[in-house]
Amino acid sequence: HPLLDRRLALLFLYGLGYACASLGNSRGHELSNEAKEGNMRLVGKTALVTGSSSGIGRATALLFAREGADVVINGRDEKKIASVVKEVEALGRRALGIRANVGSFAEVNAMVDKAMKEFGHLDILVSNAGVFHHESFLKMSEEEWDEVLTVDLKGTFNCCRAVVGPMSAQKWGRIICITAISGLTGYPNMTHI
Image (cartoon, rainbow, N blue to C red; front, top):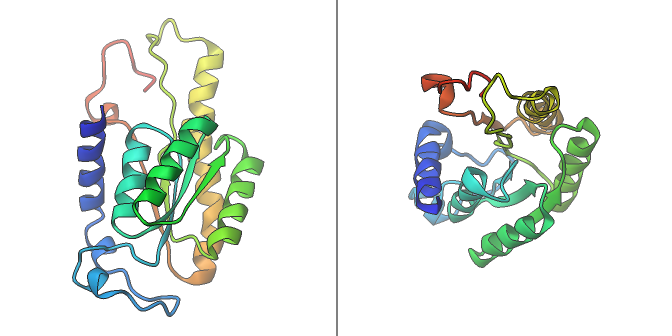
């Protein structure tokens, strides 16, 4: 639901707290007056949001753009990616859409390389891509379980591993990993999420 996605993204951004409010000019970029006043906290930053062609990832990418960041849009559906790229650009920010499977180390490395070539720096990773199968634990197939582990677990590892080098070299970066609320509450017959 779009409103719920926006609220979750707002809570998510609020949760960044000090990190967003204290963004400095680590690469010699002077922050605009709007950014200094706190109106746009991500001016001069580039964010890669995985799974941002829909849902919470899309809402997060749009919120980051509203906060002044240029955004790399990632997903599996090229039409959805292109749509979100247009939405980011309509907000006056640069956007790059990249179709890549986060479960593939090679595809993730190529995605990060392309983002670095396009923007010159990558400051924020939001590892959001994830899959959810609506099968109970007892009915879930091995293939479905493998996909969950590949995207949700290995995908997070792949993305973090790919951005740590560039972020370390520029001496600034933020990695945010999104998870499901079910980690706190759980669901009957759904111990796999």
